[in-house]
Length: 271
Ligand SMILES: [Zn+2]
Image (cartoon, rainbow, N blue to C red; front, side):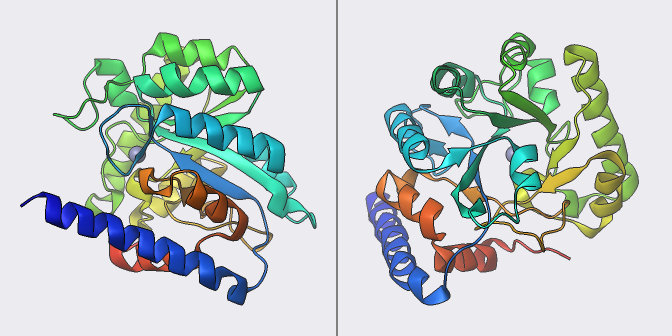
């Protein structure tokens, strides 16, 4: 019973990706750097927000050969350059133990810069972000280890990962301050960059976010350019169903139709 919708879902996803790849050329060249979003690596849960470790390694190999992987700040500085579409930024959301164990060794070995948007409550408490899931949080010790490599930009991703559309600005401010305070106390780093939980922008969060951070990123893509506001930077989620083939298409041409459908279905909206 459960297998039918699952296989239909898989087929639907693959069809949308194929159609998007076929229609990308009609939409013209995709300018500007690509910000790629990862969550869990090699967790073996089969969820869309996860990439198997072997696929991740292959994706990194391809990026090294075909793109220039740079830090968030470098991509932002160079976003108007004519070949800025060759720049890729790696971002990891939430902060999972498997990110440290499965992705970081590859990043370190290849010398690839990346940004970790850390949700502080799971790391501080040791409790998983989504209860019931096999997704242990990263520890402060692991965060510190990566911070020592100079490859990592440590960004903020709230304390409790609320959907900011659902809470009022006072509560948002308290949550952001708690997150910043913990990151500073545990690592000595003052986060300058922010990631909206679930990728959802919220009007009542806009000012609190702008007051505290230099940039903020959202949950859908496909690239950014000189017209992009620093607190509304789009990103491309890399999904389990991308595998290696659609990953390349996503990075090269954006799979823009899929991105539009995701915005519509999930309700990603900017101001
Ligand atoms: Zn998140």
